[in-house]
Length: 533
Image (tube, rainbow, N blue to C red):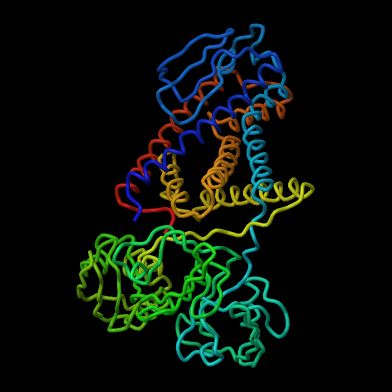
């Protein structure tokens, strides 16, 4: 329901974001240079060749052809000039101050935006509520009366804090009967369960899958004409209050409850203005949508393509990832029948499943895939809007700093995973990829546009600050490395012309990497791949 022109228009928001961050970065360098008496020769937006330039107050202000950054060129930066106002006449501390000032401005921008978000919006609700996403038939959870959408609140009287703690406590209780309190709508229900010691493949001791979330509003944004939701009378702007007569407080509850009703009719209570509207909606059977198929793989040999939706394997419905994994595991070493949907038509094929033990069954058959959204199945687009909590003036700074520090930690973690091979290089995004990601976030988030844009700006600003401080030639961090070498050598500098050649070579490599990333961004768009499933 989201068309290409809308996606392109939303993606253009990345242009003012990057322009703002580049300009404040270079303003940091510009101001630092002036403050230590260094002559600024050029303030450039983009990377040369120069498109347009004009002189003002002794500085050349330029617009350049390659829109991947900016620069402040100062006297003596890459040469041996010792003229008054040259960078070479300044001490290590002054040069380090100049080099670090750009990243410092990006850090400052991120902090101030974090303060603004907390002050105007509040803080996001805790997302450590643990909900049941799915219950396997015949499992201990099914026997205990657990349902998809229930919240797990306590085990043996001790509160469930998060999914990891829940899994640990369940594993410690294998073979023992334990008391578990669940929350269903407004009712707390006491249950008991005995986790299994040897569960079937891909099920776990209790036979459930879980999801974490927090209090949120589930708002319908679009309804497809002719869809089951349209037939049920749903309208854009409706909010989901209850499913199967049980109130829902989180998006994960809604998704799980609708998925559990796949293939049947589900009662749903909607809020429409001041009115509560009772509806029943038919939820079609779900499937697994393929997002990529490797050339020469078993899936490719079976004639499967990206966007195909796997509905059945060996006659068994595959409405979720667990059912798919169980079916593939059961079919190891055999050729199994597969039913799939393509462009609204159902087709049949056979799939040869590798015989060896499969740690990653999807990789073994050569696909990437995602579960069909229950919202898409009934023909609606929806947004999950967190219920933010307002904070007092005294809490804005500590809460803002906490959010800033969390994003900073995630930035360093992402960088570490990239350098150690924990993240595929094709997930690295340049300006084009960031535009695509911005478009996807804006289209799928239920938050106001300004909030999403501010969040994106914070993340990119921190990434820009950290990356610029890496000790690589042509980056600020690479130049800082030469300052450090000078200090360690007792004040003996590397010859400026030699340092300049190193940075020139680094710039060439950096531009090559930028174009490589941009090629990956364009390829991702052409292939129809997304950052957000």
